[in-house]
Length: 464
Image 1 (cartoon, rainbow, N blue to C red):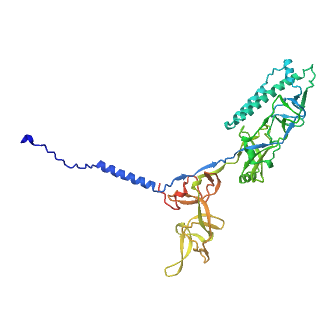
Image 2: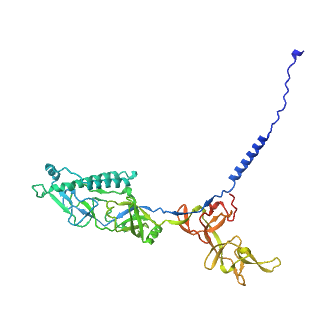
């Protein structure tokens, strides 16, 4: 019956609708995959444009100041008070300090109402200068220097105050000097320093590498109103304007500097520059030190033992190239009289050879000249072989190729292939070299060279 008929659904296979867009997409996808595969499986040759430049050498050192220093010791016991300004020159007979045997000097001054002190503009200027010097040289890793600065500032303030108080000492005891106060004058001319550090007698020959570790440096600050005994240090006197800064270096660098004789030095503390005479010394342990001797500036750095300095040498100028571009290549060396020119003025040699039937003949072999001396040419070894016999033009003389030598150079790619060019290195550091420009067989500015010689072979075509 019609009502009992079941609806029958027939499924037909679905067809793949391929259109032009899918075809184009598939082609592009395949092309991209092939390009990526080729990229990761091919050598990548990167060019570098040669430019003029210079290299500044890393010539910053921390040195030790060496001076003719005399530590003056007290001949009396008591409380010391300083009146000469630190870092200033004193002459023979100038008052440097007093020794108060009773310890009652300040009490007497207070009783007289003369303890109030007013600092002059020069005094304040000295304090400001001391603060600026400390601030410019402060390093957080050496925080202990803050305490030395505090002690030094305290001593400076007290010395400046004492200079004012000194005017009032004469009024004590009705204008006569107090019998307990001893005036101590300088016995020699020099620069006064109120600290000791054990380096006072150190000479170049006594230096060791351990002395250059400033983290272990200890300085004893001599302060006002301190109680001293007979024989205790009370101040230091630098007696000679000639002084030096010693630096530690290797033997090669020491020779370079001593060969100069004199060198300009920049003090990083204040950027002052001065010329120094250069000498060197190597101790029994094989440690080499360079001594830079000055005839001025000692007064400026009289209180400093460690100084950061920069050696100013002439910057090497020329063509600046990366060291990764430098390669060494072997060449045959041939007397100049065996090199001639062929067709189209191409350079080459006449090589002795034999025909198939055994007859001796000559052939012209084109080759490139890469360098020359007064009597010889450096020829490419890709077209010649050791043992080849060359014929001298217009002569029967022969020369057997055997002599070889190597040249330092780079691969020039101006013509689309790797062409060796000799270089003359003027200066070199870890990353770059400065080479001479406009040489006969070398580079010129704006030439293109291979950045990394490990990625290319000589005469290989360069695809960019």
